[in-house]
Length: 279
Image (cartoon, rainbow, N blue to C red; front, top):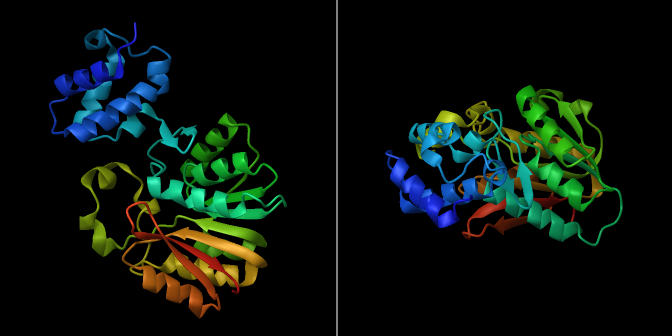
């Protein structure tokens, strides 16, 4: 017999001794309730004698994100496999793909697309489902991340070309594209204190922090690459640090890009930059 969601939420409140506020508990409860473990009846009404429940509570008390415990993350309408090789997909990235979907919804040509730093594969997988005629390549420096992305693409029977490649060093090995997308590492090492302990302890730092003190290093590389490898009518969409908007804009302007739009997220923060070659 399944527990109702509110009963599951109460069980969490009663079981977790670590400090979680009611909002966190409700969010965790919703995740569990929608997860494969709940759907497959691995969690049932006798939670106290359930080994998986005991492990789940223990890891939550250690600070583990619920997505890594369940090895499952929700992104738009996707259920994705995740582990500590990849970032947990963020709501801001959902806004990024929503913008792209809106921009190209009336386009029926087979665009060639590049996703830089694909992680779990959330971006190319969502877009390939929406635009099956697109030719999508997705790259990452992490072989562990690519294994996760490939598993997720297989889950949805999608053909995406995943490449293990260091974009900063080997971008000249790539071709021409109509659409370039990236959620690159953009947090400076000096801003580590602004990141939650849970993120620092469990999520891959290579996907969070720029590898040098230049926190815009990826935007510089993307702008340089796109100045030669983006089609005339092509577009670039990138996530960015809300406090470095002007710096990122200036980088693209310095490489001759004139059509630049900064998009606000749902919290009215400037988080996405859209770039074209000419107005």
